[in-house]
Amino acid sequence: MSDENQAIEQVQQLEDARYAAMVSKDIPTLDRLLDDKLIYMHSSGVADTKSSYLEGLRTGVWDYHGIDRTELRYQIDGDIVLVFGKLAIRMMIRGVFKAFESRALAVWVRKREGWRLLAVQSGVIPGVC
Image (cartoon, rainbow, N blue to C red; front, top):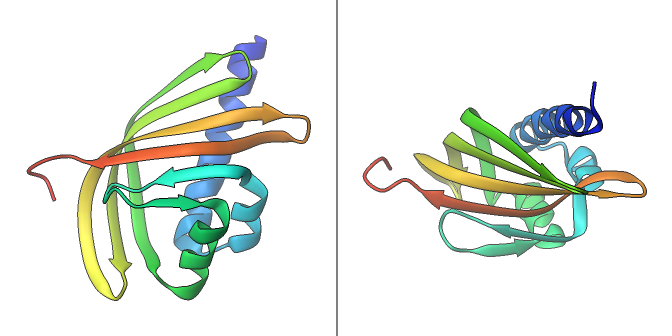
């Protein structure tokens, strides 16, 4: 297996773990996967840091019920892997149920301690929410 294929396979596994942790509110796993410099741009336009995102999950601002991922595409460039995909999300946001689809980009960076999620950009697909 090539180094690029191995890196993509590792990031695929980390993405699976990240989404499972988001739904189960597994804060320790997310703390390990998210880079300290994380910027998380929600589909609403709200931006979070690693600490504010984890705090929002911890306090119930976001309560993910399910996230289905399709149309996944991985692109690698050196120590960066870009993950493009379509998401169907079911969740409570501050106590209000929302179901919507979005396009998302996740940026993973390889560090000495392993792969870390550096950035997320998400946008709602018009007319679907």
